[in-house]
Image 1 (spheres, rainbow, N blue to C red):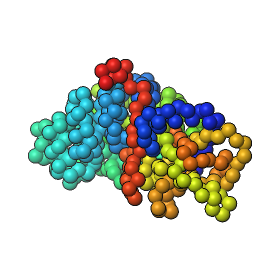
Image 2: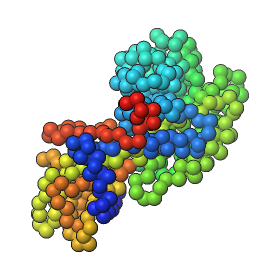
Image 3: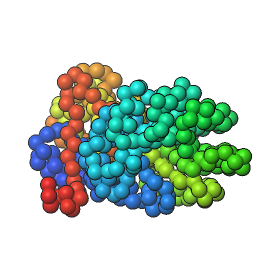
Image 4: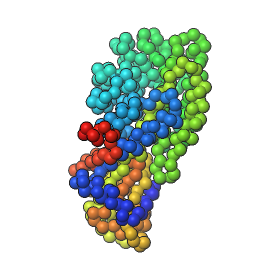
Length: 388
Ligand SMILES: *Cc1c(COP(=O)(O)O)cnc(C)c1O
């Protein structure tokens, strides 16, 4: 995958210049709270009746949490640090699930202290960790469904095989630990929803089989995250993506309550990166532009998340030159995009990266002493704007 680079007239840069000037800082990540709300609402509309738990790891930002809490979202946490963030948000701990299949003792203690009582497990050792807390917790059993078409196949690392479900449920029952349902995560940025549909249907069969045997009902199905974001290859039609999922959910028994853990779909479009050319050099006939953000910073997702963001530069010239967009650090891996034909850029010009909310700031470092992008907010909620 490669970045697409759009060249826009310099007048279009004015919005970003103003933000940059007002904040007195570069690089920036501009968080558009209204876009975040729109994403949330469109997913809720595409999956009616499904309770949403935002996966904090995709963009662990307090303003994102406040904005989504105000929309009525629940939250998906994986660590003590994420529970700590949530403790500062006006949301009931009841609307929190802990979904890391492998937990340190502290993660369990801190999540319980926060008030989260739903945890995900996928193996006997992990089930046994809940024996001391069996009066207070209920578990979800994570089932693995391999997803070769997903950009990031999360079922490689976690989840039990569907054939193991019965044995693990029996093991939990033996220890007196309540397992209230099943969960899965088909992987991030799935290209279509067929894997989710297959996973729902398999879980449906498991739930029905146990019910038919008169065993305690599995009354929760957590369909995970993986809802795709657009990275410049056309808009994702979430309504169309979710249609087969809705049909599969309609086939579940009445008593099953459905949850989802969207991360990327909510966070990705909500942030725009703004970096500045800090220096340039003509090397072997190519213009190298060095920006103050790169793959050790907001563009870290290009390495860790295998994502390339739609880029935008600004010029009124029709002339094009071979160009490289580089990050600021002294490491040669720190290149955002190359093999480009771009208009000539000057020191101080801007690079805008779109759909940069998910797995960007989350995995940014300050390697080499270059500070991470500062987050600036636009379109905060009305009443926040009035009181804040
Ligand atoms: C990362 C993760 C998510 C979010 O995945 P997205 O692809 O960003 O939607 C949800 N649930 C679990 C358990 C995860 O690890």
